[in-house]
Amino acid sequence: MTTKSGNDVIIAQEVFVRRRLGLPSGISFIVGTIIGSGIFISPKGVLLGTGSVGLCLTAWAVSAVLSFCGALVMAELGLLLPQSGGPYIYLNRAFGSFPAFLFVWVSSVVIHPASLLVKSLTVAEYISQIAMDDCQRTQGWTKIMAAIIIVSVSTVNVASVELAARTQVLFSVIKVGGLLVIIGGGLYQLVIGNLGILDSGFEGSTTELSGFAVALYSGLWAYGGWGNLNYAVEELKKPNRNLPLSIGLSMLIVVFVYMLVNVSYFTLLSKDEFLSSWAVGVTWAEKMFGKEGAIFVPIIVACSVFGSANGGAFVGSRVIFAAARDQNFPEVFCYLNVHSLIPIPSVIFMTLMALLYLVLPGNVGSMINLTGFIAWGTWGLVMAAHIVFKFKRDTKDIPRSVRVPILVSMVVLLLCVYLVVAPFLDGLKMEYIFAFSVLAVGVLLYFPFIYLHLSIPGSGILYGFMQLFLEVSPPSHLE
Image (cartoon, rainbow, N blue to C red):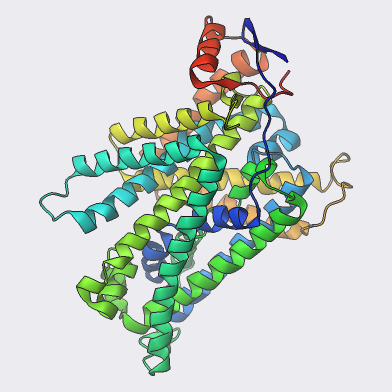
């Protein structure tokens, strides 16, 4: 067939997205993305904000319920509009191309590259904890290892969908297996009658709402990733069955694992040990198995975060692909490799952005705050879109197997509003100024290049070169 690329006309074979992800892959992409370093690090923040074991477990339960509500909304939206791209698709249909473009713009230049960077730095840090002593472990070596991890993740995602899916399944099994060891250790402590600080109940609970809110922020961060499969729904086999099943089963697995892991932590660690630990899982393992036996925890954490990075890179490239296919982003980013049918230009772009952030000055904490702030703003808009679809004439009567009450999305929307507003109560930080600057640049780019469809001189030559060099072609139905 003949397709157009900028000003050039070339001949390209027919290419399209294929359904190659089954139920196990769907579950692994959600579980593997959610379970990263959060369950090893976040428990400290949750306990710090609540002050007691009982209220801490309550905060984890509330975080689970709120995350489950958001996941249910995503299940309905994925069946209502079964196209890859996740939030981009829903914002575009509910509010138009302008907010949808801004979401893709911020996602492609901030959220997904910064998330890939943070996860890669985390993997590098844990690898250095295992392989190097304090003198060898420098910031330079950590960044070099992080760069290698970023390129490795991208290579997996460029090679084939099957390889990315198998990698996700493998690392999901490893991380869940490691957490089951921690759960087993906690159950053993309970069987022998060692309750640790579990019997302290709600003693020492905070009475400040702000403290509980901080605990929720940490808990919700650990549950982040429940909507990721919607980004690649066109690649999911039998989506009407496998999408809601993947989301539901994944959330049940994560909630079950998270709650029991926290119980296990409390059987061995005192409150002081809990709050002074740099990584609660490592401290627990050192007390359970000794320093030599505890080495498995950094390995599990590294595997967990690598799997999460792999899943994040996979879904991040799909939202760029979906927007470019709708001509709401540069056309070249929807081009698929004629052999693997993977949007290679999108993967490469995200990789380059992550590597750029790696060499720029900054710290991981700022990146986490930045991505969290933007992500919760996005999820708030998605919940608003779900409410809009309940009343829009062309969507309210579409038959679907999952229907979530509007009250659910309203509750999650209120939570998102709070999580976006709360950071500003402590003053305006530099990362939030950067976020608004990125949005402002997106506004300036939208009107000439998306709304008026102007093109940069020479873009046709560049697109043609990339097609030949990367062996990519526009999707068959691209106009």
